[in-house]
Length: 115
Length: 112
Image 1 (cartoon, rainbow over the protein chains, first blue to last red):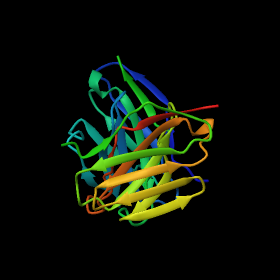
Image 2: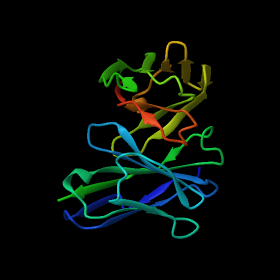
Image 3: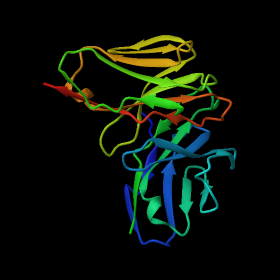
């Protein structure tokens, strides 16, 4: 069964550094998403992406964050000037054509640890 | 009032029991309702997806949506130790372009 893959599984970074989290969505999916889950808290929406542009973003997704689809298969989340509170699991998800009526499928996440 | 409320448990049941998990919500615009299963250090795995009200059955799993009460349920029949995981409800309105709102998750343990 096709799946969303994310790399790396665990990223350890010094505070203030930049990190790039990578995702390969399911091949025929057109809508891409990033979510995060701080330890012990809910999964929270960050951003959705379609047709090479951001469709929607949450209050969390400020100027520190950016997303990109650099080629036909990868979808990345860049976090600049990382802070301690950025430590969390980051999940990529994708869905098929109609984002409202098709469920999102999630990857296994990248655990980001900021030291 | 929080948008999606879910009892975090933990919930412990013997193997073979029927498990009932539920969520309540406040936003009447929600139209799409999902249940995800999350094992430790893994991503949410889609279990059930329902549009609007009604029931949906898939094997041992049944999802119910009652939009009039703003209440959704997941039933697991003949529960197995492999069902031990955290179960997340999630909802979307479609018009919000796919922004899912999650419950906090219920941790389930099925004892052999």
